[in-house]
Length: 430
Image (cartoon, rainbow, N blue to C red):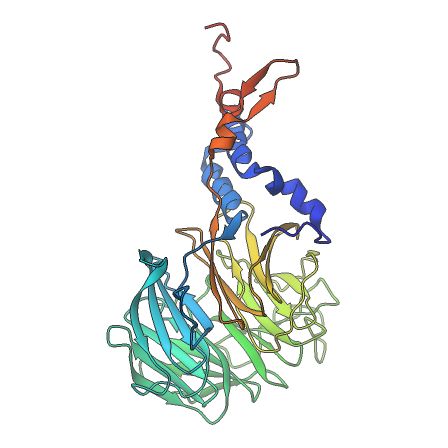
């Protein structure tokens, strides 16, 4: 749903969603290809961008509409092999798996597996973070406030191993591109990054990273040994887990230059990336750019290689979450888009310009996270209102668009499709 009274309404008008520009923009791309203004290999990326920016509420969900759910989703993940199975962590400590390619009677996703809280060796408290093992959907990991990280067998939906820690873990993450290690990075409330080795079962390797609790950690999707952390000390730091010399980069909000072991500038004693607690980190699909979000609502874009602040001014964003949450970036679209939970709404911005593209309103309470499916181009959001919402892109062509007419400068009119796709060499009289 688009908000007419949103402070950035002019940007929404420019994207043209109030005039169904999703179809016109698609056909306009065809005209630009014909005129040589748009390379053909960028056409698909443009189409995906238009679709990703046009989400509306779908009637498909994970709950039956005639039932009041006893649990709700606190964290979720979509597997990156087929982008088919949706993994959900629940507030009672349980987990649930859904097949998004199969919709059953009642417009609900087919349930592929479930484990209730406290059963089958599961968690007894709300799941704080859940993630598929990137290389194989036969395994996934969960973390909770009970100081444990559990590894689950997907087929049996049962824990097969666990890491018992001496501190609470907020978020954890496994590298999507790792081939030479199998490390799981966990953010601890002691200011340490705990590296858990899935092969050996060891969790003894720790990085003293921050002066306060770490809220979120993320592995780079480009370099398998590079790790980023954000903490309650307002700092965002980049680490190479092979090095014992401290952080590679410490992002600084007050200076566009960077600080690190390769920099000639003298590093500040305590450089900070934000003025408040870091609550979310997200890489672009190619790993070249890093997005950071803080409790004061500031969204920043950084060069992940140099640590340079790109000074992109995004629209108004607000949050009341002090814990880590999940935002998402579109995959292989032009321009790239970022989806950010903003209290009860989901806002969509262009990654490099900060232009507001879409505002989605459907939750009745704070949205806890958002996921993007690059295959179906669906968006999934879950909130404290116990709702799980699927947002689907608009269709490219509708009956209204086909019947719509445009004027060619005189009083005569032509159908929209005929005007855009007409061969320049053909004779109008033929």
